[in-house]
Each structure stands twice: as C-alpha cells, then as structure tokens.
Image 1 (spheres, rainbow, N blue to C red):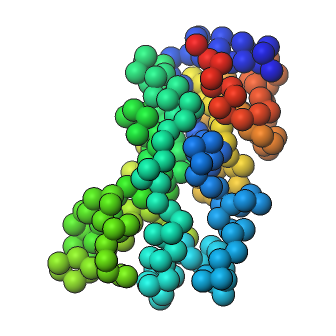
Image 2 (image 1 turned 30 degrees about the vertical axis):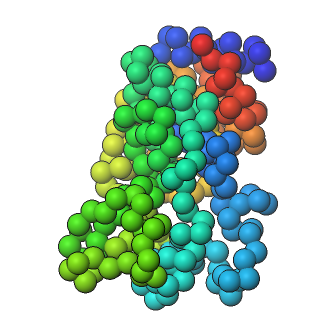
Length: 246
C-alpha cells in the first residue's frame, strides 16, 4: 500500500488538471449509507415501507402517484444536513485550492464536497440541498422539505415543492452532464473512487478520459482497463489513502 500511495503522490505532483469521479463510497465514511450494500438503504427493512420496492420509493412515479409516501421516506432517509465531510472531501477541496484539481464529478446528493470547500462540483444526480416548485420553479432552501409541517409541501402558486434530485425515471441534468464530460475529457489525470461504476448513464462518462494517468481507489476491482506503466489500482478505503497524501 505504501508504494502505491507514493506512486499516486507522484502522479498528482506531475498533473495539473485532475478530475475526481466519486460515488457512494466517498460519503459512507462520513456515515451516509449507500444504497445497495448489505447495510444500505435498499436492504433496510422498514415495516412502514415494506410493500414498496426500494427503488420505487425514490422514483418519479412514487413522487407523483404516492407523494405522501415519497416525502415520508425522503425525510427519514435522505437528510444529510448534519453530516460532516471526511478526509477525502477535505483533501479534494485542498487540491482544488492549490490549482491541482479541475473538478469533482459526483454521483452523491449530500452536498458534502461543497461543505468541505470544493467549488467546481458536477452533481450528476442533483442534491438534497436544493428544492424547487414543480410548477413555477421557485427555489426553496435546503431545510424546507425536511422541516415542513405539510406532508406534501406546496408552493404559494399551488405547485408541489420537490427536491432537486434526479429520481428514477428522470433524466440527468444537461448542465451537470455536459460539465462533467467536458472536465473528464480535459483532465490529465482521473481518479475514480468509491463507486461500482454500475449506475448508468453516469458510469459511462469515464470513457471520455484521454489523459495520462487513470487511478482507481475502491474496495473491489472495477471493470476498467488500466495500463500498469501509467495507471494505478489501490484496493482499500478512500480515507486510508487520502489521509496519507501530502
């Protein structure tokens, strides 16, 4: 591990346009559960929601057909307002401040990268920190949905207020997608961390990388082609790796 971290450090030092592409494994070390692991949200057996498929509870269909159920589940499971960034978030923010990191591309919706200080973050699946009216598009603060006394929150225009999160059955934001692809295509180094690369279309964006160094940091191997001369795979937690970087 020490040798690999030293190699990673060397790659970082010789790169000036680094992009980090991260998934749920970035935030699990802050205590945010992922979705599909044995302890993830989809494997939590809540009597209240047991008649629904877990993915349905975070779908556009659930929001429109059973909004009471959607918002109850959302309030119970998606509130990350009091979660703090971990060492990975903080090191990435510092790398950006030093001019090394071009951007963070994240599949997470918890806003922890921004909380740590990152400025250029492409949130492929949106964020729980923003809300808006589905009719007039008026924006509402992050606390609004979690603290609203209404089971289904309504805007003054009568429209339903919803989270700015890409739900199942919805398309990703063109702005986030285009920004992420552009950043990856212009990177001289891409670090992939804490993701299984099984969630599409987001996982397909890594194929736009044409830079020099591709680094994967994950607890399990991914289906990514690596050149042993200029790329690197580190099996382990992101926190273990990032705390060793200078």
